[in-house]
Image (cartoon, rainbow, N blue to C red; front, side):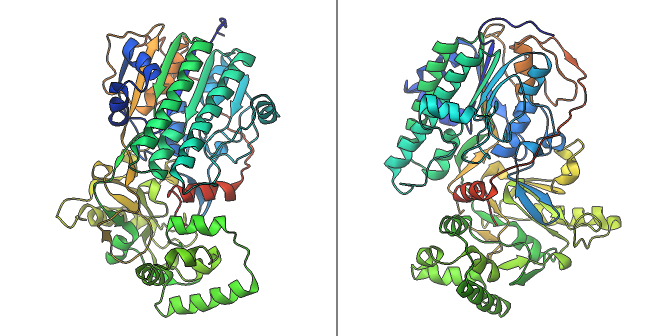
Length: 544
């Protein structure tokens, strides 16, 4: 047991997609005085992310100190055979920082951490963030109503109103950032925690929704800096750690349609109409969800008609290309229900496919293994042979200029280890410098010069430490996502877990590690999937 001391002992500030390439110009211009104070008074450096470097998998890695093979979240979706569901906190099957602290009798306030809904019962407060529904249950129960009564509006996501107005978007970003800071300060005053964690998601969202808009990026970071300043003044933490889950940068390559590559190699077979792994544009999905999906008798008739056309070769992808050439694609997308598009879309035919990409953010290919997948066709005796075939096929993929598309194509064991490895893709595909947009969609050419999105997550994030017990003369060379949780525990004078994949780095003294009791992740699964799916589709993460 560790004795409490008055005041916040350690503050962790999460900057989603924060990285030196984004931060340094803002710091040099003087736009971020409070972030600069942490960097200048302590030590900072690049933070290596993980595979895959995306929010729902990377943040759990950061706050558990373990790789996805141990905590079990590999992307935005969890799969049961070919069916899927949006991930939530019940899918994080490893102990979080606030659960470690609760074990030691310390108190936490956690605001807006991704994949924390439904929240755990710990000493302190948890307000879930990204991947939660808009009105999430918080801990303690009733806390969301209390926040709204005390502070006014509190939202998890920005409203869709004014989505096409950049000025309105910027103001919604500022508003969300202010909500995080105000909620965190209110809860810190109320609970007087030993540990605080506040995460800002808009530092990532702005790049997806306002790509290339330096004004919007600056506005978001200035708002974050202002809230950080207020938090530092009010909470006066002994130690401050700033960390991100990954970096951000522009795509310099094209779009790679992995299932098309696999189809050319004879590993994927497709069919038109009916059930199967669908594949259509995520923006279309978002528009369809926004306008509702009630399948009227008229829609059922249209679905049957489009399914028949698809089987004859006229798929929704081809229809979409024709509509786009005449400028009618948006008009149709605003009016055609989701189920209708599904009927006309070319899809992976599972009973005849050896392998497939199921979700682009997983960065890999799944073998359609007999006995594991519902329609598995690859005997276990041929598993390694098929993996070799996939690896050889993808390593040979080249851009139009002859450069390798993939920096690495590996067996999953080279990236994941732990009890949940079998839930991962079987072959991991890492694009060169993360400069190519991978997609699971079946849309014709396997390589297309223009990616669907102009910005992408990068492998290098950022980390900074300042305050009590931090050696500002030390370095953070080689820092990884998995080191953050051990460093937080070290800052609190606690041993980190032997099962963690990282450890405290040179700037902070460690009391060593120990074996903790096995984690009991008995949590009730609950989520508002439809609303979350809509948000993920809008950001281009969800291909369905």
